[in-house]
Length: 256
Length: 270
Image 1: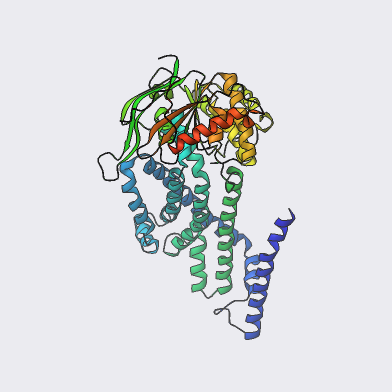
Image 2: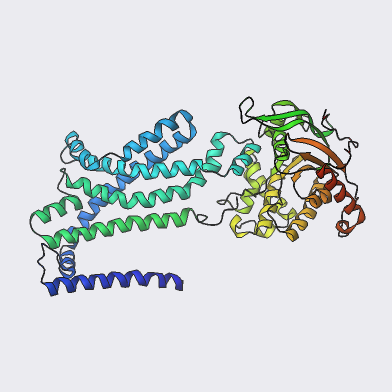
């Protein structure tokens, strides 16, 4: 326990020092908010607009969760298909790489035109596209990188491919899945936010940051950025917690 | 035929046949293992001992030749869970408790939950790990993990145990203890054992017969019958033990005259 507590302090201290230096820089150099607002200004803006901040953060978080779910389900299903059917393997991996290379910034306005102006759907789709690749790649690795001796054991026990998947491949892939999810979860928040920049309903952190900056409300724009950071961190920490609970064996020395 | 645990006749295994990286892993190998018999396969790397074990286990098909296991084809024997297998690595599943690792073969054989559990606990008692039933594999030492693997290989009460250097990764002390344990268990259950090893004393201590193999191409060169009677603490220091160790060593060097009696059949090396 003690070491955990000790591990918390250095980053907090570093962050405090950073904020202090920032504040000092703004005060001493007398920087204008459009150049760089002081942490104190960002903080007061954050507090006075708390309910709006939370509401906006929640909107983006909801988009991110929906996209994360969709992208994760697609990633898992297609990784399983690719592992199971040889024909699909050679097809799926280049397709997955292609999806990873989709320029989401360019795709967003196109998708926005395809759906209703008030629709959240294009944003969810953009997020799902971004989430898909890290999940697919990691789950696929987890399903295929199974120790050979365990496959031989399964064969000696006359396990069908379906049983091998259930008993061996899926549990083996779980730690890999979480490696992917730890990348994908904060990425989902960023993707949702970026998608909000380019049209669609005037809701969410992306829209608000853009409109605040356009209205020279720099303190507010930065306060939304803080919200975005908090949401992203929350996603990461929830993933971390899920990982601890569901794969307690991960990172242990393998017995095989 | 039904009195034999394993019967292999004229078995060839050629990898990449016809290609320029063709390897003859097994060349005209014939071997019989009687019911309740303990037979070791020994030889340098590349002699085909593990390949032979895998052919018997139906993990790989032979290129030519016939094999029967417990009176049926290796495939049927595998489907009916008539052999149990243990490897150099324990190959336990980290996400399962020790007990549920032992239950794995029973689960795949369709046993119901309560019967499975009872049988697993019984097996863990046999390998003296009943107190570790709810532990995770990574909490156990290498020797304990291997004992779990042995318990697992015995789960379906198979007629035959196929073991591929199961004690290869263990230290000497643990290894000798495990050998005693394996002898006790195989005797108590009447299980026939085919045991791959590259340790001469291990092969001699455990076996009724030691089958000596040689590489390029993989073949049986000698069969050394071992008669040490009941093994006990003095066995490893007895003259008879040293004589058998010497006999196997000579055979491995290719100096001894081939020994083919005692039901063992040799490859006809012409």
